[in-house]
Amino acid sequence: MAVLDVVKYPDPRLREETRPVEAFDDALATLVRDLTDTMFALEGAGIAAIQVGRFERVFLIEARVAGRGDDAPVVFVNPEIVESGRGVSIGEEGCLSFPGVFVEVKRPKWVKVRAQDQHGQYFEIEGDGLLGRALQHEYDHLTGRLLVDMVGMVKKEMIKRKMKRWHSEHDADDDMGDDVAPVGV
Ligand SMILES: [Zn+2]
Image (cartoon, rainbow, N blue to C red; front, side, top):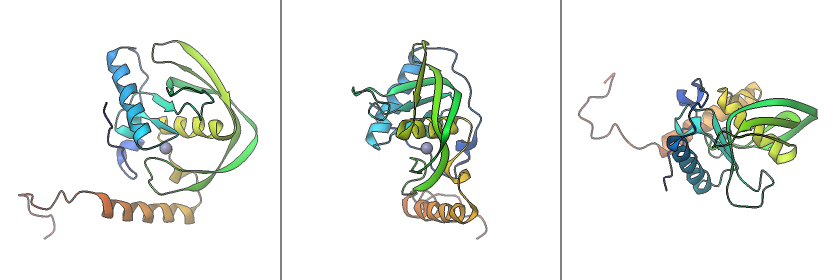
């Protein structure tokens, strides 16, 4: 079991280009297991590999959100949105990379996603409501799109301020006790 550190905004890794998975091997299985542990530990509805600093095109959706009764999350490898629409819905979203931030986001109400599972098998899943929203949110991560890009200017500034405060309260005092003198002093 490994709970990984989640990359928080504005870490530039959240904007990195992601790459398709080609090998459905043990390394992928380990990544999926670690993402599962991390998602459960943080009680997320979903998580994308890029949020733990990995650039494979992989995300997970929690089982209940995905409408599956069991405990195993649904694993999406190399996902594509094949269709979306049926109107627009506005709903509140949070993100593990933006702790404490919740904003209203406007999205297509319904979406259909085609992906491979962790063994390479293709499948399709469609959904509206929370599932539709989670699928689009996680897919956005693979394209570098974040909550902060989905809101107007005022909310954007609010999010940036909130995250600045979060980092000042949570980041370890790595600079303290270092041998290197602080720059600019
Ligand atoms: Zn997110």
